[in-house]
Amino acid sequence: MTRLAAPAPAPAKDSPSMSAETPERVKILLVDDQADNLLSAGAVLEALGEEVVTAESGREALRQLLDHDFAVIVLDVMMPEMDGFETAAFIRERERSRHTPIIFLTALGRSEEHIRRGYTLGAVDYLTKPFVPQILRTKVGVFVELHRKSGLLAHQSKLLERQNAELQEAIHRSRRAEEEVKALNRRLESRIAELDDLNRELETFSYTVSHDLRGPLSRIAGFSKALLESHRDRLDDQGRLYIERIDYSARRMNDLVEDLLNFSRLTRMEMKEQSVDLSGLVRALSVELAAREPQRNVEFVIPDGVNAWGDATLLRVALLNLLENSWKFTRKHASARIEFGVAETPHGRAYFLRDDGAGFDMAQAGRLFNPFQRLHRDSEFEGTGIGLATVDRIVRRHGGRIWAEGEIERGAAFYFTLRQEEDQ
Image 1 (cartoon, rainbow, N blue to C red):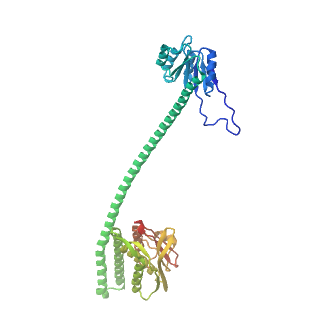
Image 2: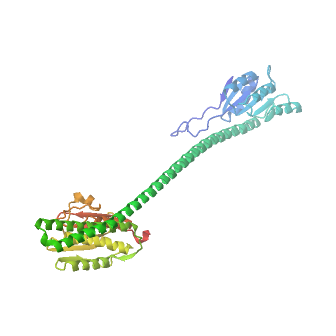
Image 3: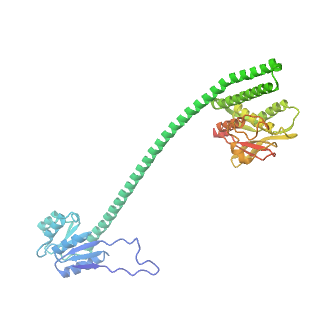
């Protein structure tokens, strides 16, 4: 057995000797019992630049087919022991070589019987000796190119199958993830519904308790006041002190229940959003506060034209609580300044209310907006701890946030954002 191949050309200077894009050479099987014929036919086929494998008998050709795949087989008909037709029959019996193109090459001439037998065995062409080199090279070259393209097509098909498999797997994973997200969303929606129900129950409970407590508390306050007025002379100093403390506690509890009731109403109140003149609201509220304690020296700074988008009633409640907070915590100063305005902050455009009153320790800022949390004792400043929690809830219902800055005895500033009209 002999292998013939065209010599590889010398690599060009400054270029790689073998490119990764160089196609792999295919194999051509040349079968003939005459060494001279193998040499001459091999020389003709070398020009194709492929690997030419030669065999001197049909048996040797079959052995080559056990180890290699060939693009085309050029098979001599007249050979001893096993002729070309017998060899072709064995080639066609094997699955691996059943469709390998066979070109018969013979010196017997183109008799109809030989041609018919050759094509019956699956031959693709039939050439007679002496052959024309150009014809042999061209015919073999066609099948070499066909083999190369078939191999490329098979490779592309396998690549496409793999990519399709990967795509199907990705689609499967995506669908599985989508189902998981849907399941999570369903659980989340169920949880939200449960929380909504719990919140409604809590609000109903809070409203009911607050409403039902007001009656007994009012009666306690009324009876304690009547007792003081009608039987003061029958009570000693200690007794009167006890009654006064009962009256004070009842009135304070009544205030707390009233604030809690108002706080509960905020969540259930339907919002009617519109453009609201905050400057006008703050100015009107400041007049009300000043009328309560006309002897106080408080300067209000309120710019014109500050508007917001929201529910006018709720925003009035929020501003009233903030103003009352500033009014209360500036009371111990001989003069005070309360300023309302708008500022650009890291959280966007924010409204603010600033005073120069008692202020607070920033370490306690996280407690400011929690219900019933107070940073000052009752003996210093009165209150129920509901006002700022009310403001926080109103601001959150308007899609905003609230925060505060302060320093002890140097005042406090409350900032809050609101949903903009264009975000509706």
